[in-house]
Length: 114
Image (cartoon, helix red, strand yellow):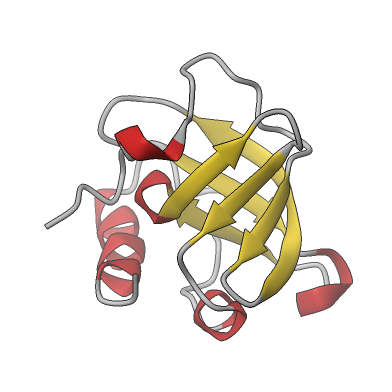
């Protein structure tokens, strides 16, 4: 079982890389840009602003869903489809930092999908 909240060593993510503004690509197309990210041990994630694609919705993606970070192209590839991301639990900016139950809900959703 992969740790959903840690960057995959094969993703080419280099700690300290500023990901804000990077384009995010699902397995079937562009989904948005990184609005926020963290590299906290065991609780790393990116927040993606989907823009007009899902009516300005933001989504929280655990770092474990990231397949590759291309720093040169400023692009992040995730191993999810657009529908999987669109159907994810609603992003709650007040809960995502300290609410363990909320984080578990997000992690459980993505654990079975990637």
